[in-house]
Every structure is written in structure tokens, then in C-alpha cells.
Image (cartoon, rainbow, N blue to C red; front, side, top):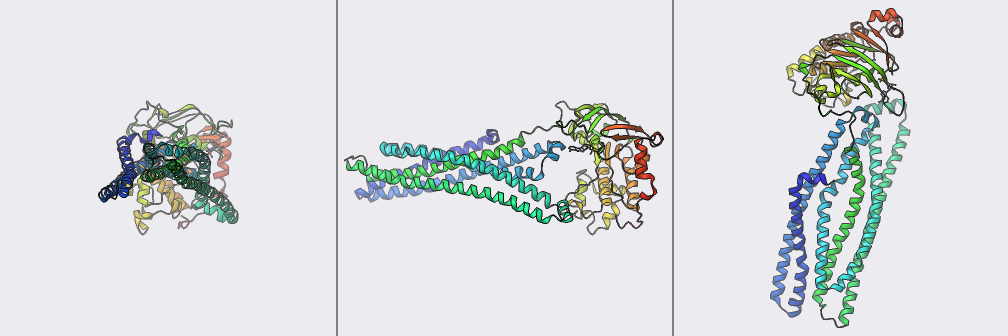
Length: 589
Ligand code: ADP
């Protein structure tokens, strides 16, 4: 935690100096008060009264100025640190492999990034300076009180342990409540995220589960309210007890002073008594503040724990310290798998892929075929290192992919997935994702090749048309062609292509086939193939079943073998009844 402050050492130092100066200034008015009463009022000396009243005003205003200054500085430091934490979390999360995201709910991640960080803000901005100024005020006030009268001081100090006990009890409780609140907030955020998205709403509406969902939301919502009520109660209780103590304290002091004066002690004057109670009040206020800070800090630990849990995450896919630079231009695109094994969950001894070995020569088209769940998608994940194999190697031009700089690997390998993820933004920006510095000409060229340019220009705002939430204004075929345009812009050496399973009308199908052929040319391509045209064009077909390559070869040889491939082929393509509905006008597109 201390590390967080390190970049701002100088500013922190300056702030601390300002705090001390402010505290010392605040100590003067009670002393002036004693002089005003004892030397001025009680002796009818108007000059002294005037001078020290004026001094009190000046010092008080100056002290307020200093307080404002260090308050501002500490907020600055706090905000800078918040930024740092959010940046660190963001970078850390981006480095996590796919495994992390498939296992974590999005709402959870957002809550940590935004609301947990927000929650520690008070601690790192105001709390630290507050704590310091409060400690300084308490100590200096105590010293000043001691100088005025040690007996009265002892009486006041006697009450301090009471404060401490209350503070730590309440602090522990508040920490639990805080953690509970954040966990519940994350729960609610996740729920909203899952249900208030296009897919979520579709699911609810098509299953008619609105009432169940509403009930569940209400339940979770009430839990959150419950936590928050608890939090407020803790605060009330805390302040009520503190108020009680601070109100009772002066009465005790007056009584003791009265008793001492009655016994004939001449050292206690009216001025001393007034100055003393002024100092005591000055001390109790920050003492309360300190306790509150104690509660604040203890409960913020709950949030820090949550934040550091994420900051301490070790990405399972990491760049090797001696990774080599491999510029895209120099890459041929030869991919070799050597005995690759992998399972998603090590505790479950079922492998997603087992003993995968094959070689794809530069520019070849490798078609992956097999029943659903056979491991085709998983196999493609190792090339861009979305996951690393448990054993075995994946080589690109003879380099283990784990020894290639991640940035370079990302440039070399491109993917067109079944689901095209479109940002809620313009078409132009959605294309720029693939190549941030693409010129308009390059963009148009890519879209022409992907057979989507004409469609884009027919839209009212052309390339500046805003794509709806997750691209729902585009049909499946159009989205695929946008994805192909993206891939063309990126121009990777190795392409992973997950062909859409959903059937398109013939016109779209023809457009896509043509643009795919253009895309695959000159690149090593791995296609999770659902199109006959892709399979027929493949240099080699890998037939997968239950994580293994069970057959390999070209279409003819595999067909002649009469094994799994032949069966799949006959099921999917050879029956005339499954010929896709033709729609030459392309309405369904
Ligand atoms: P295919 O692409 O051939 O349909 P996959 O590669 O998607 O097959 O899946 C292979 C196996 O791995 C399946 O049994 C699937 O259930 C499992 N699997 C896929 N993704 C995950 C995941 N994120 N966590 C756990 N198991 C997974």
C-alpha cells in the first residue's frame, strides 16, 4: 500500500509540512483566549483584549487557508493514486488469459475496477492527511493542556481508552459490513449485466421467465439494502457514543477545577479554565476523527483485499523474459503442433485435446472437422496463445509460440470467429480496431474484397453509421463479412477461421465464399469448417473426435476410407434434403 504513494513523495512531503504548520497555528487561539481573559478582561486592559482578539482572527484565517491548501493537495494525491490503481488493474486484467474471463462474471470485474477503487478513495486521499493532522492536533493539544494544568489533563486523558475500545469494536464490525456490501453490489451488477443485455433480454423474453427474474432481483436487491442499513446503524451508534463522552467531559473538568479552586489552589484562573476546555474540545474533535479513521481504514482493508486479489493475479499466459521479436513481414507462417495436450480444468481428468501433432506448411489451408465438442476450437486457441498447452509445443516458423513476443504474435495471428463482436460505435471505428492507422482507401479496399462495401455505402451515414448494441442492426451474413474486412485490414500471416454454423441464403453464401477465398489466399489458414467449399479446398483435413485427431488427409482419401469423416460428410452435405433454402434476392441477409 505504501508503494502506491511512492511516485508522489515530494507532494506528500509538502502536504505533511502544511499539516504541521496548520496544526501549530490552530494551537494559538486558546492561548490568546487565556491572555484575553486573565490579562485583558479581568484587568480592564482594552489594549491587550484588542491586540489578542485581532491576532486570533488573523491566525484563524491563516490556519483555514493552510487547511484548504493541504486538503486540496491530499485530494490530488488521492485521485492520482486511484488512477494508478485502476490502470494497474486494467493492465493486469488484460494480461489474463481467456481462462480467467470464462470463470469470472463481468459484473464482478467491473465492481472491483470502479466501485472498490472508489471505496478506498477516501482512505488514500483524505484519510491519511486527516489522520496525521488529527494525531498532531491531539498531541499538541495534550502538551498545551499539560502546560496549563496537569491534573485537569490527567482527567481528560483518562477518557481516551474508552474511545479506543469503541473504535476498534466498531471498526471490526464495519469491515465485515463493508465486504458484504461490496460482494452484494458485485452480485447485483453481474445480474444486471447478464439480464439487461441484448442476449439476456432475449433469453428472458423467449423463456417467459420475467417474474422469476424479477423476484430474484428483488431478493438480491433487498440483501444489498440490508447491508447498507447495517452500515448506517453502525455509524449512528458510533457517533452517538462519541457525542455522549465529549459532552460529559467538560462537566467533569469544571467540577475538578471548582474543587481545586475551592481548596484554595491559586494556579487555576478563569482564563486557564476557559483555555483548557477550549483545548479539550479541540482535542476531542480530532480524537473522534481518529476513531472514525480507524473505522474507515479497517473497513477499507476489505476493499484493499479485493483490489489486491486482482493485482496479485498471475496471468497463466505470460511473455517469456527472453521472448524474441518476430516482425510479421519476416514470417512464413509454418505451424507445427508437437504432442499438444490440454485440459481446461486440471482437477477433472478429462482432456480437451490429446496428443495433437501435425504440420501446416506456409499458405496451406487446414480444415478442422468433427462433431461438436471434439476440441476443434480449443486446438486453435494455442496458436495466438489464448491458452498454453499443458504439455507439448506449438511452433511458428520453428519458434515455440511461447518464445515470441506477445505483441508480435498478436500481429501475426488473426481470427474470424463465429460471433463477430462489434463495438457500439461507427463502422469506421469498428474497422479501425483491426488496424488503428488504416487509411480510408485501405478500409474501402478491404470492404470491397469482403463484399460489404456496397452495403455500407447504401446506409444513410455510410462508414459513419453507428452499429447497434453488439451489432444487432446487422444480419449474420453482414457481420461475417465485416469480420472478414477486419481480418483483411489486419492482414495476419496465420488466420484462424471459425465458420458460422448457421445457414445463410445462397446470395450471402456466395458473397462470403468469394471474400473468404480472397482472405485465405497467401496465409496459413485453420478453418473450423462448416462449408463444403472450404473442405474441398483444404490442403489437409484433420478429423477430430473426443480431443484426438482420428483421421487426416484430403477429401478424396478420407471419403474413400469410409470412417468418421465419411459419416459426417454424408450427414451434413450429401443429402439433397439439407440443401439450403435459396433466396436469390437476399432478403434474409
Ligand atoms: P469444438 O470446437 O470441437 O466444438 P471445443 O474445443 O469447443 O470443441 O471443446 C472441447 C471440449 O472442451 C468440450 O468437451 C468442451 O465442453 C470443453 N470446453 C470448451 N471450453 C471450455 C471451458 N472454457 N472450460 C471448460 N471446458 C471447456
